[in-house]
Amino acid sequence: MKFDPASKIQDLLQFGEYGDVNPSITDSATYTFMQAKSMADTFDGTAEGCFLYSRHWNPSNKYLADALAAMEGTEAAWVTGSGMGAITSAILQLCNAGDHIVSSITTYGGTFAFMQNYLTKFNIETTFVDITNLESVKAAIKPNTKLIYTETMTNPMLQISDIPALADIADANNIKLVVDNTFTPMIVAPSLLGAHIVVHSMTKFINGKNDCLAGVICADSEFINSLCDVNNGTAMLLGPVLDPLRSSSILKNMHTLHLRMRQHSKNAMYLAQEFKKIGVNVNYPGLPEHKGHNTLKSIMHSDFGFGGMIAIDMVTAERASAFMEMMETEGVGYLAVSLGYFKTLFSNSGKSTSSEVPEDLQREMGMSEGLVRFSVGLDNDIERTFDKIHHCLKVLELL
Ligand code: PLP
Image 1 (cartoon, rainbow, N blue to C red):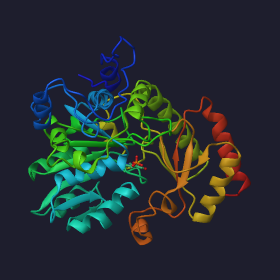
Image 2 (cartoon, rainbow, N blue to C red):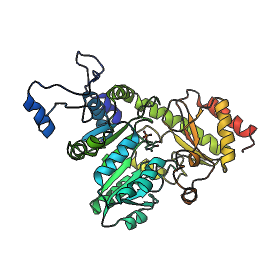
Image 3 (cartoon, rainbow, N blue to C red):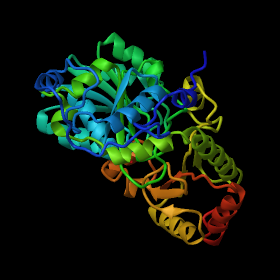
């Protein structure tokens, strides 16, 4: 049967203390107990339904986590104060000093920097591979490899990960497949395709308002419980918890996510097709000639389109800068990093969100210095938006 993440969220019966249609917001860091024994049992992890301290769990975060687990089809989830909080907690929970990771070379720059520069403090090494080359993934696995890391749709190259095939490789080696699904919420549910752990930066599409940072780790209950273990859980001990006031606002935004994803995708498809018509070198997984188009079609279980992310090649950083500055003045959107916002955002990846990746490596992975990444907004009249973009290209003689 078709998996419908939007209906899974809709079906949740989450309401407030006084019958409020929105769940009550937890405005407390700590929780009272009527019996000392209940407190001791809660610390031991044997008391069900009790909250002890908001860094561990709190009711607002539980409502949001339940909605995210429903959306991803996992048993459980835990919400963090940023996407990096989710990524780093999940990885640190899985790895011990001396372990090894196989990762896609194209990931968000912060993730790359964490693996390349930070984890080495703990003698945890990463081999970066082209994630679409399954043979190179297999060849990179060593006896001490603990996980394969990828993004469903990679940032900023928009490659598509063949999640079922990667899950098979992980299972065959008794290691975990961790997938960052930030670019494709609703569109793909990696855990239903075999991924063991799914992470998101909720700062992006899930919240969609650019008013806060947030993240989530979705997985089976065993993994989520291990993250929150008071003695050795990474989430509990490093403390990257999301603020409950933010949880409650993100939860409300999740109920419009399916409508937003459909509109982001519709607008991105229109722009991609128009860029192609005027001869701009465009990268969009929704176009049939995209290398990952068929893979994406085979892993998406829904009708939310091919996502809101597009990359075009302006060849040089100077041309990219002039183009982005003029687009901002003409009202196309904002020259800003991040994505999943209701307005269109654009940035030159090599000079911003992937600047952590050394330039020689950027070229090796095929990232042009003139790559302009668009997070296409919810514009009601995308034809009007394209006309403005086309105008900029013509005036700046970039065609
Ligand atoms: N994952 C992806 C794919 C991202 O693009 C980003 C941020 O741009 C992150 C993770 C990090 O998320 P956050 O900024 O919420 O920490």
